[in-house]
Amino acid sequence: MKRILLFGKNGQLGIELHKSLSGIAEVTALGKTDVNLADADAIRRVLAKHPCDVIINAAAYTDVENAEREQELAQAVNAIAPGIMAEVCKKNGALLVHFSTDYVFDGYGSVPYRESDLVNPINAYGRSKLAGEQSICTQGVPHLIFRTGWVYGLRGNNFLTKLLSWAGRHITLRVVTDQVGSPTWSRDLAVVTAQVLAQTPGSLGERSGLYHLVGVGAASRFEFARAVLAWLDGYPGIVAREVQPAPTSEFPSAVTRPAYTALDTSHFVGVFGIPIPGWQQSLHQALLELKVEHDNHPV
Ligand SMILES: NC(=O)c1ccc[n+]([C@@H]2O[C@H](COP(=O)([O-])OP(=O)(O)OC[C@H]3O[C@@H](n4cnc5c(N)ncnc54)[C@H](OP(=O)(O)O)[C@@H]3O)[C@@H](O)[C@H]2O)c1
Image (cartoon, rainbow, N blue to C red; front, side, top):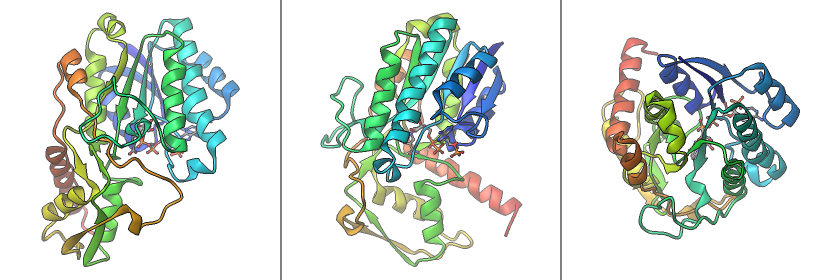
């Protein structure tokens, strides 16, 4: 059985990965209280203490707004730490699995981005994550970098949980139409990653590289919100009845977000032969699960 060292165990993806991987590997899962990824020496110490076959890095500095003010910290966690992990993987013959972001693109495109498309991040978070990809690639270590986007789960701080909170308080929601991406359920990302790792380890090294891995398709924030509300119709505690289209300019922010970051997953599917669900199908499934949880534990 493979030994996996998982960073980011308390994040929305890390929680799901921990569950999905436990059946196929011996998993040691670490959070920020176990190791601060801004501390290079601490990372080296923890890596020496936990020899493994695969390192999975689901940890990241993910606060896109604060990354503008804390650029050094974002660089340490998102760029330097993955480079150290890659260096140690290379020394120990381990595989590194890392997650990157659709925000490496500038968002001026209008068709889903492919892996070969030009990167050009327009904010500090995107720049730090791109630097992380590069620090792994320059080590020449077997790696899988999965670029994902618009990750949501049933808990934590994400666009779905924000919508659910707004929908419990406001009859009309105003949501932007001019930000388009590929909504991705953290569960899908974890299940698919576990399926990849369950494939023979030898062939994984040969398929080392960068892959786009998101819910299939594209949606604006507005379309996503409308789908959520349609499926929540009649759901207890939801008072929202309507989603109105709004421009991004209506919500001033300290950070510029790329407008269009849908990703094309055909390279991933072609190489690994693992199907990825469409974003609507997954959202529906996630909301059904939420309903079952609510029915079992009504507030
Ligand atoms: N969320 C999205 O929409 C999105 C989009 C594109 C790509 N991604 C990428 O997908 C991956 C998973 O994201 P996610 O949504 O699961 O993020 P998340 O929920 O914010 O989880 C990130 C985890 O990283 C940990 N972390 C942050 N700073 C750390 C530090 N200095 N030392 C150790 N741990 C630290 C956090 O610990 P604490 O909980 O203790 O703070 C948290 O558990 C990341 O690589 C992210 O860049 C996410």
